Length: 218
Length: 233
Image (cartoon, rainbow over all chains, first blue to last red; front, top):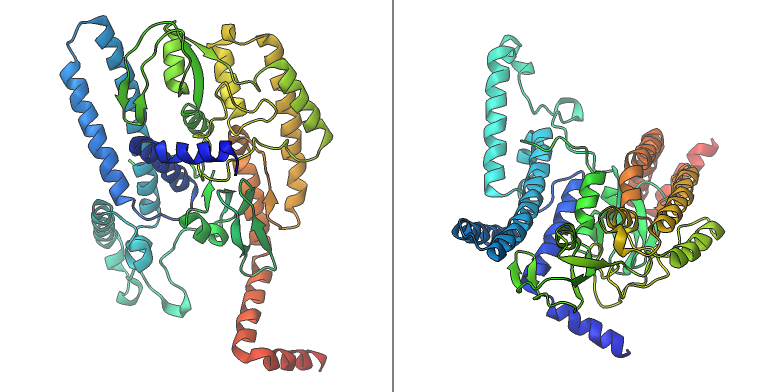
């Protein structure tokens, strides 16, 4: 270990909490935008970020009306950054809503997926499904024989409820050397990931590594 | 309300991410330190250099409050030597070395500040170079030359992306070390589509293999041998 390494290590610990949160949230946003599945809701992180945004908005509101040109320019910087943050949060939430919309019933019936939703997302999915059900029933389902009215039929060994395609190809970058080689089920593919490697792989093969934080989607 | 975009970052989103890269500026005006949402900004005292996120540096630059010190790799000699490396190998030129102690990744690596390595293209090289050439071409030495070599680099690397598709046919994982953010954003739909398409073609084969493996696991090794005997008959 030379002096650069020691300095680098000190640097990491010196990164302020806000910056760490920004880095973490940016990564969460990119992962959510790329992954075919919905990912666990980052509750604590989200609360910290929303609280900071709320305080910053208050600050900006307080300072509006200040005609000093210096304060005015400061306000422009604050507002520009605020808009960037709001964009991130909005894009993150909307990406999740898009996934819930696409497979609402799957998100409500599959227990492990259901556990990843935030309370308001859960409420949204429930209301959404109930409304859709009521609409289908009143417009055509009630005309069908009772045995064909179900929306979640599993007759014939096939479930009607469709989930996302977890085998979709994603771009992955290793953040650490991954100790265990990654196996791809159903093929004889196995590969090792060294720090910094970028590979195109199906999501189901790298899901565990990404959730553990050893790799990220790009 | 739901996001109407396809999965995967689009080029504008990649550019948005690139704006979080740190760049070095030389302020021309004083500015007190600010507590921003993404962390504190140190006070600006001309002529001392400071590292700021690109979006803020561009804001200051457009208002003539600062000059941007371009990263060392964004200069004709560096880009030309990288171009030589690109031409001599079938893979992308090696990305900047990573510190072994952190798991920080672009855009939060110091790969665009004035002390970035001069001999490697960082992840956001294309977007960053374009943005600096657009907003701060007067801070860059020989901007026209830089622009020209950047275009050469882009063409060489695009050709590699296209040539790399041949590897996909084997159904193996595809290694793309050193690829840039914008290049991923551009190639994602095509490469992802090819990988997914090939997977669907091979799906039935894969399914039967999966079933056979599951069966073998249940029956143990003896069971597998029996299967082979059956096939002989």
